[in-house]
Amino acid sequence: MVRALILLLMLCGFTLPAVAIEDLPAVLARIRQAATGVQSLESDFIQEKDLAMFATTIRSRGHLAFMRERRLRWELLEPSASGFVLDGEHGRRWHNLQGKDERFDINDDPLMAAISGQLLAWFRADFTWLQQQFRIELLDTDPVRLVLHPLGDKGPLQQIEITFAADDRSITRVELTEPDGDSTRLVFEHTRINPTLDSAQFR
Image (cartoon, rainbow, N blue to C red; front, side, top):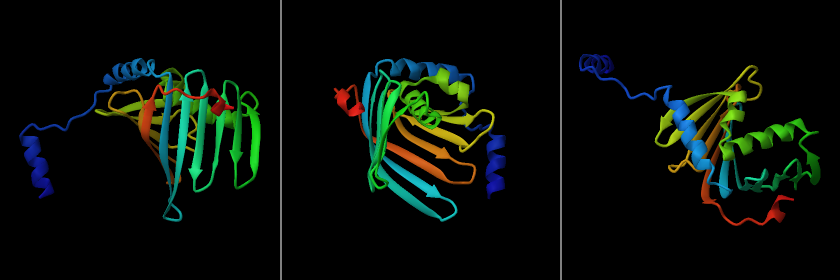
């Protein structure tokens, strides 16, 4: 039956729709332009981490706030509270279960520099920065879905898949896949564009 269907499609000259690679620059330019109108953003998110070895999913809920002046707040609220804030070059991270609450400077903390740099690049649509770190592939245009493949040594990530909202101004879903089969999904909901945010929450 499957062979017959394939043969029929071939005889009818049917071709599956594909996204042309030359569409990528135009799509990135469109998203970059849409992002210029986003001065602040606030969203809830659900994080699901699938652990291949244990065949289990760890589910968390969180909240994020972003302001274009390099301000970011990323926190998990359930089941335990942890997160970080960034205000320019300086930030603070905390983990309630571990009793940690400490300041950091991204110039002296490569890990926090990498994490915050990637998140800021997503929300600012900084494809210049992203293309220095990843090869970007266009999967779909409605909505836009991109796959980011790490350049050089893959390290802890195999790929990142990002889905944008219909208006291109925000992200609705991110899936990070690791070489060992583990994966993490982030689903963003109740996103608000250009809300008035209190700068105190970034300290």
